[in-house]
Length: 253
Image (cartoon, rainbow, N blue to C red; front, side):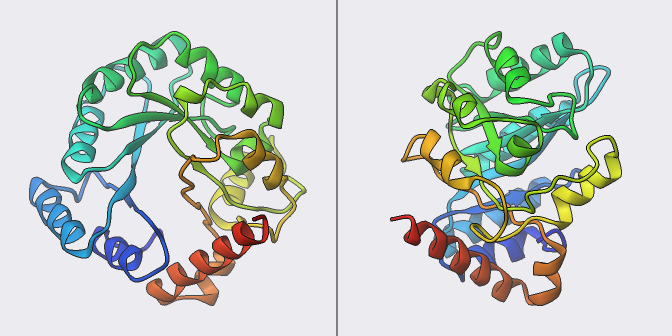
C-alpha cells in the first residue's frame, strides 16, 4: 500500500485477517506527534507492529535519522526495523549496522539486514558476512522471497542461517522468469510492481518455508501493480492479501 498513510495502515491491519501490522516511516513527514498518534491508534485498535521500515544506509557519515528510526520503532512497540544498504563500502556498512544494533539493545527491537540485488548487500552470503562481524542480540537477517530468488539463493543457504539471526521473513510469489538483472530499472519494477499472491507465481516458496523455522512470523510483501489496480480500496486490498496468503498456507497444512 505505497499510497497509504500510517493511520490507514493501522486501520487496514485492524480490519483484515492479519496478526500484525507493518509501517513505512517517511523522514520528511514523520514527527514526534506522529509517533504519539500512531502509538495510541495502534493500541486502541489492538494492532501490534511486526516491523517498521526503512533504515537505509547510504555512503558517507552515519545518518542520525537511522538512529531515530530505532527509537520510533521502540516507541511504537515494533518488533523489527528493516535495514538495507546502498553503501558500497562493506566495512562502513558493517560499522553503521553495528551502531543501529547497539542503539536497539534492550528496546525489544531487532534490526534486520535485508539483502537484494538492488542494494550493495546483494546476496545472502554478503549479508551473512556482515552479521558475522556484528555483535549483539538485536541483529537479524531478513529474507525476502523475491530477492532471495533473484540473487540466486538456495534452500540450503536458508537452512544454514543461524536460527537466532532470524526474526521474521517476507514471502511473496513472482513470475519464475526474472527481469534483466543488468537493468536496475527492471529490477526495481520487478520488486514494486510484479509480485504475486503466494502460490500463484513461479517461485519455490515451499522450499523456502521448509528451510526456515516453523515459528517465524511472515510479513507478506505483495507489492503489485495488478493488486493495486484490482483493489483500489485499501481495506479491500488488505483483506484480499490476507485471504490469498492464508489460503496458500492452509493448503500446505
